[in-house]
Length: 351
Image 1 (cartoon, rainbow, N blue to C red):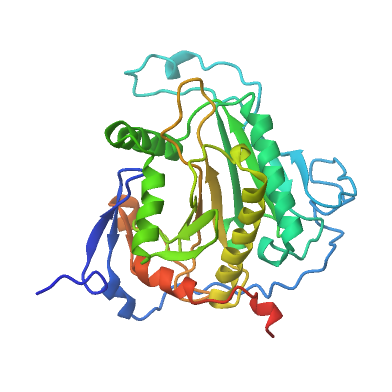
Image 2 (image 1 turned 135 degrees about the horizontal axis):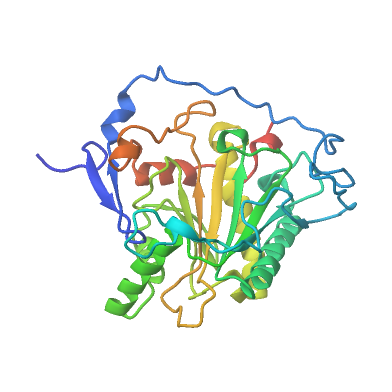
């Protein structure tokens, strides 16, 4: 017998976190009798008088939005983190060996409205508008990086991902701790850098460009791949193609424009895959703001979409995934091939 990764189950290691994923490609043949989601028709008005995020409307907290014309940022009315929190006392502060430990997490959480248009998502916005989103991400990273150790930019798109409002928006948090996922990436990237003298993701991008088995799209400055260790069916990783870059504010002017271009191409492909407004969670990981050297870091963005077989069938992280380790049916190479073959033209413009 000769091993074929498209036929036989195997595990793949994620060098960024040290964790493993079980790949079971033979399971693609099984029939589906599980949950089927209701399909959102995606038809919305350009302005919704009941939307908390539309220009000029009153938000749930009672504050009225300005008549904004491009991006708009405000402190979340129901923020998950707060700048002023009293210190933990009592049993939860009993020392490093205590079984009951807690610590405060000073921080702030802001909402970023990508567009005044209620009916648009990032792939449907024009390139100039997406550049403005990129510039806003950079401005917010710079601002929060002055006060906080970690800046987390992210977007939850679609009801399937728990998004509470369809208006195109994301969030940015600044917090004084290094969260679990970045902490794993920090450790793994540092260990690789200490051993090899080069950033892990710089070497990984070069390897993917050489092999070209998982490359989805690229331009002069950016590369999108389905990572070898992908967990979600059509997960992608967005990386600088040529340069070592620590954080979004380090981008040169041309790289900001090319980032907007590749975002539009990637997200259009996502929508085109199942002819739906493709749900996902995405987020940027860049070097923490702390005084010691961060040269082991490389800027990157994760796109984690749940859809598996169609616009109505998604991947569930349950059972073995929760109690053992992550598992996927579609190989990274198969997923990359399907995304690579899709058009750069949004399906709504072809009908």
